[in-house]
Amino acid sequence: MASRFVRTVRRLEPPPRAVDWSIFVLVVFEAVSGVITLGAGHPANALLFLLHGVAGVSLVALVGFKLYRVRHRVLDSRLHDKHTLASVVLAVVALAALATGIAWVAGVEVRLGFWTLLNVHIGFGLLVLPILLVHLRSRFHTPRRVDFADRRRALQYGALLVFGAATYRATEAIGSIQGVQRRFTGSRPLPPGDGNASFPVTSWVADDPAPIDPDSWRLSVEGLVDNPLSLDVSDLESDRTESVLLDCTSGWYTEQDWTGIELGSLLERADVHSSARWVTVRSVTGFRWSFPIEEAAEMLLATHVGGESLSHGHGAPLRLVAPNRRGFQWVKWIDTVEVRRRRDPAQWLAVLVSGFG
Image 1: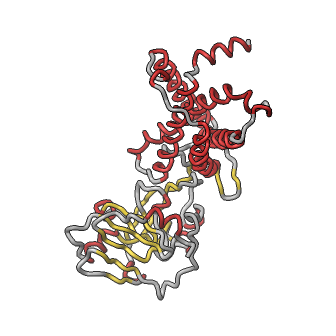
Image 2: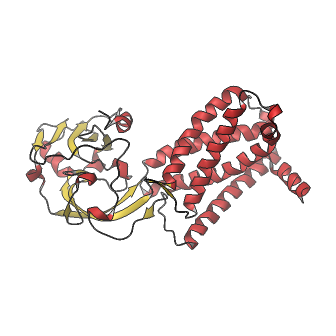
Image 3: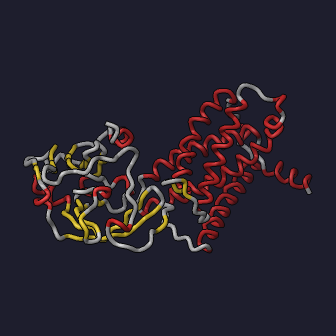
């Protein structure tokens, strides 16, 4: 039985160098696609999430081939060298990233403090790439055409792709049998409810300002405008209510009734220049995000949720409601709207360091 298994593995396994470079390519793809999916909330992006999942499961098979091949070098201490530890750490982190992602899709519910398995998966996934680059410094071998250009190789990779797709769908089916409902982003629904208490207070990195005094707070609309605005809370009173789904990168989503004023109406009042193409919405913490001006004009600056005034944790006195955007792009504690010719190039840095000042 064991010998039959070994023969099957050898028939399906590409050459060692092909396995190693395939792992590298898939790890880079998983890291890049994973970062992109953090900001991909529109249903049109569903294919990217599917490819991320299928590639992840295919990576499991490739890592299995790799571990089977090097098992003697790892288990026999006499074969260890100065690079063995880095290799073992890479294997552990990669397997942890893959296992937590698959477990989340399958419906496993485990929390580590405020972190869901999805958060843990993202954390391990971000660690894999730098450890892999360190590993490559000591184990680098130039890819060869002969390792890939072969009909048998095409069949092997075709089988690998079929395995990844079938296993990913089977994992989703297990979650469905358990009654787990997931959006294409992987997020799960919160229990029905309205208002501040019906969904968690979350902050991106270190964003956690002191409560804002509404009497001294002002909203500035500036940049490429002929009529800059400085507005207080009373200037934002509106009865416009929209039901919009908030999908958080922590792995949950909720649909709420948000009340506020259209961002587009403020842009009209500010008399935007014809050269304007982007709108940056900024928090009192320095956190900010940029949106195409046409999309931004359709967004809502909310003061209430579920008929209640926003709580401080949910962004009072003003937060952005951005349909088809992920939760971290729904900027909280807004104090500035800047109209720009180009996207803010420093926004990714800002979301990492905001709140530390």
